[in-house]
Length: 281
Image (tube, rainbow, N blue to C red; front, side, top):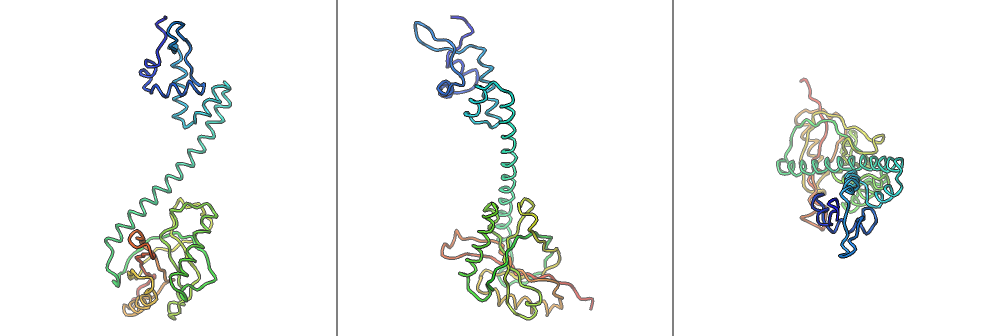
């Protein structure tokens, strides 16, 4: 037998690949032994077949599936290889975009937990600078302040369904908020028909986003959804006592949700906030 022939074990060893993998390549026809010993019936590879195996491994590293590799090798058509690789490039770009979204979502979740652990106790008033934020929201025909958390859950589900219809990843389903117009807050009239989620730069529906301007916000922290109206009134009274001028709409922001601890209801830690300006007097 010529020295150029390699047993399946030798072929596997010098290519850092398993024997079962070579047997599988043989079974699907993309790399078959080229010589069979007439006496022992052992099958051998030609050393020059390493080039084909290198090509198979290279194509796998490019993200091509074995079925695609089989087709392009059988066709011996460079244009077909190019077409497959162009398609793989588009798939890879999409995967990278999805990974960026997931990465940002993980960062937001970590920040949310850290912020919860370091936030003031419920009922604490603060004055904070909050940078620009982007939101995606919907209007509803229900004033959720007239209802309980069960109705809020249904409205929140409407928002989630809208996002799903547009192919928005589920990682944006958290960190929800609601808006109360400035004039309604000043009159202590709780009428709101808007619910939203905070989003980041990778959110796909960029044309439908709104910006909440940066500024100084008077805030109060709360862990009970049912007490929001009472604490919103307390926040307004606090601003009046401090002689802060209300500069915009009131926002109820869900900082964190820990439903892993209570499966019977939504566990929320809220930051009630309103933008303020300061009097010169």
